[in-house]
Length: 166
Image (cartoon, rainbow, N blue to C red; front, side, top):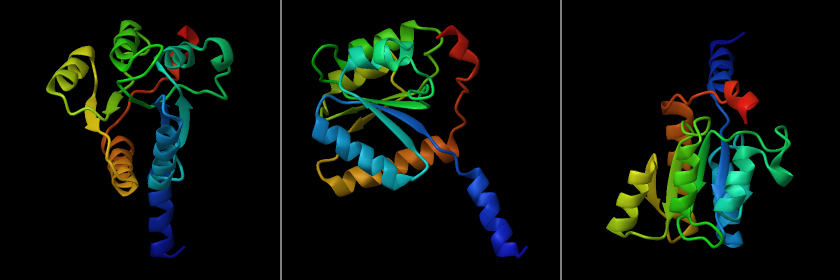
């Protein structure tokens, strides 16, 4: 095997797919974000839910989200703040109340640049707070940075052991 081919094989083995749960009430924004995340890495698996209540059902395997194979535990959650039914801050607080969910990084992705929203998000347990880019190109760049950071730089906790408790 040539050195270049061997190097390519090593790099492919190092590529880690991310299971990403997008919690966004705006269908167009959700679709654009999912598209950008898939452009960042074809290995990503993106799952979308429309609000915080659906997010909790997904994470706790309730209702239509009971099938682990179809709805695996996410590696990261991208959470909008301003949503109907259950807002982002309440959702984040409820996620942090569950011991088996606490170590899933939640990245708040909001259109708000309010210092109050940022402070409240970190106080509730957000791993990061990102302001939504205005243009799709900015969203693609942000998705690429997120992918590099969460799949290449950070070592995430395995959720396989906690599946029994879910």
